[in-house]
Length: 200
Image (tube, rainbow, N blue to C red; front, top):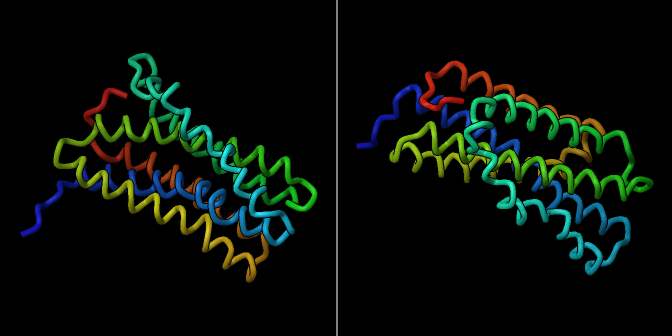
């Protein structure tokens, strides 16, 4: 018989799914969408593979990871997460206004910035999970993390490639940015609806 999850934990887990979905979109963009676009533009596979450095913030995030649970930062964690979500949505929307054919360096800069924002968001979401879920809930939290992140990767990669042929590149990129923004706002609202054990 499956264990029942209390309403508060369901709220927290739903917030987790939303946040990790938003976090996965820019990774799907960098790992799946951008390589296809570059290949269509005639760039070599060697050049495309060399773009791994755009995701360096994910490897370097341990350098600033302690900020996520610092006592002075913790009271502002919710608002920092919301700010990161809004910045991530803005960065994603910015792709739509600069054609890749004429603004490739700008796209690379945005991709690196998005990786920085998403990896920093990951730090704060993980800290949020540790503070707001008990030992049983953290198991569900890990599931929410993997599921949400995978959905985000699909949205930022395969889905983006598919729907841009129907809607065009600009509307599709703006749709991805809207999903990131709505996910952040939804998670922020859910965290206020549910009683919280965390001090921030």
